[in-house]
Image (cartoon, rainbow, N blue to C red; front, side, top):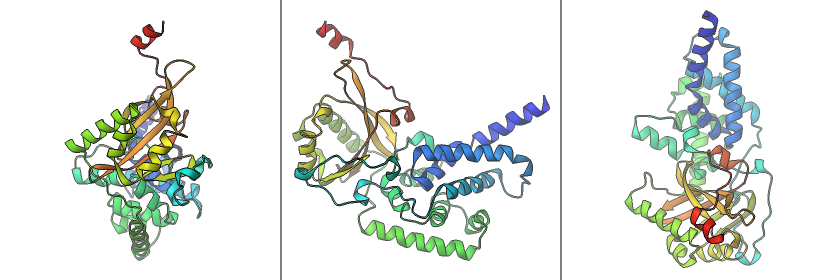
Length: 337
């Protein structure tokens, strides 16, 4: 009875750190699925070795030490997940072709709820959201694994240099040096355009912009969509390495190669600290709609500056707890009878 109670208490104590550890591992790995695997491995290791935990640090610090080691083991020096624009130049519409790359090439989207723990401090919450946005995540990928860990722990999680040094088993001077190099690399990324400006939280104007976007996309109204896009807007579609720049090429793609998306339905999701939508494409076999993509939108200066379509029909929708099929609405079924 006592052992069972102790085990249950330990499970509860460990479980309460799952969300923040998933956020940490996601920033380290760039993959929502690998992050969940890393956290599960971390909790299993902690559970098995808890008797050796001597309490010289907090339980939270001990878990982060285990999680860091798990992530470093999973990462190699060349482990860099990317966005399409990190790998090639923009493709003109006339040369557009859909060439997929392996899943492990790409940064993956993640639901906010899986990586952002509830915090009372608005400033802390804002930093957490900003640090899972795609641009920041792409910049993190340019850092060697240990620099990545130092920057996340110091800049995102606000750990002291002494705490990070203890966690990594190194000196404060080494931590400070790694942080300085990491900051310099991120500054270069921002100068090269990796750090797009994103407004958050959404104000009334931005909410209306999203409402207009949904109406334009579901209505497949390219004139209305063009009015919402910045002239240098970017569109990506992992796992395809194609990416497009400018509203003319984007809308041109949507009415040609991407024309099967006409008639889609969009449902809001919170993804990577940004507004997003789950897109269901018409399913001619059933008359309903089937999963097609998770869209992540970037907003700046009252317009859409980027929208990223993560195409997948089997992985993303379960991750976001979304259904894998939408039945036709009752009135549509009656009309077709």
